[in-house]
Image 1: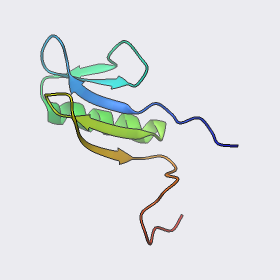
Image 2 (image 1 turned 120 degrees about the horizontal axis):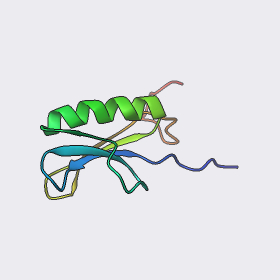
Image 3 (image 1 turned 90 degrees about the horizontal axis):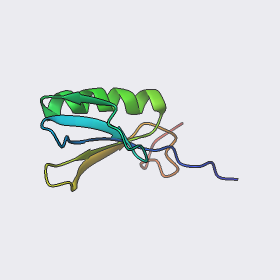
Image 4 (image 1 turned 120 degrees about the vertical axis):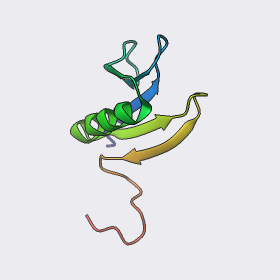
Length: 81
């Protein structure tokens, strides 16, 4: 039986300026930062702690990059668990 996928952490533009991290499915932003780089760093730490995916969005809302910090069902070739 497959486990439910944990919600990803997303750094995205904050409506009032700056950037914020939001866990998918939550209405509220978990934390804010003035710069995208700062928000990405905190978001990465949140994703590692939660063992989930970290999805980084651009200013226009499109996905710029994504990293998985959980159990990836399709690891890269040559990866050993």
